[in-house]
Image (cartoon, rainbow, N blue to C red; front, side, top):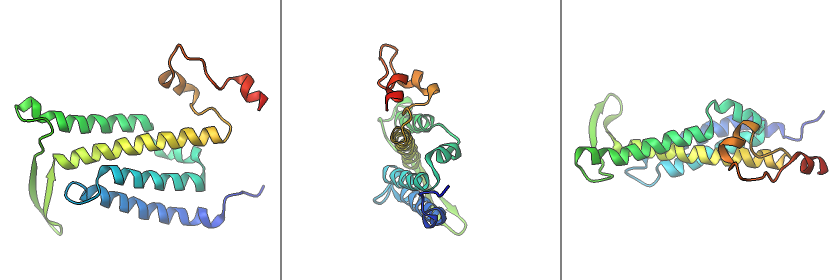
Length: 172
């Protein structure tokens, strides 16, 4: 059976993915001092993952991710919130950031501090939420239920009735 996905797209995707991954990390690392940061870096990585999913299939991409998207977003939110709340426990103002400089070989004087931790948390939240939306939309557009059977209890209210039932799927 002939695949509808272009050979050129499949062959070039790893190079584009690697390039956008490097760009996302660059945007993340320069963000707390210059334009960029966790949000735009997370969006860049999410777009690279979308390209990979279009070329190789979203089921393959979801399998290769190795961590649940919502769990990644939860860890990122905990990191960002912890970075913002930590100074309060030491009698300092909420969201006060601390930074130190370290002399590293080949890199010179490099800043390390809580702004970077906050940006990494935001990065994780954006990647987690964006990839979850991508997975749900990919499943829905392929005619499957947007949520896996194991996810329905986590994301749906017990009082809700599902829109997609077996009868609705069989009618389509």
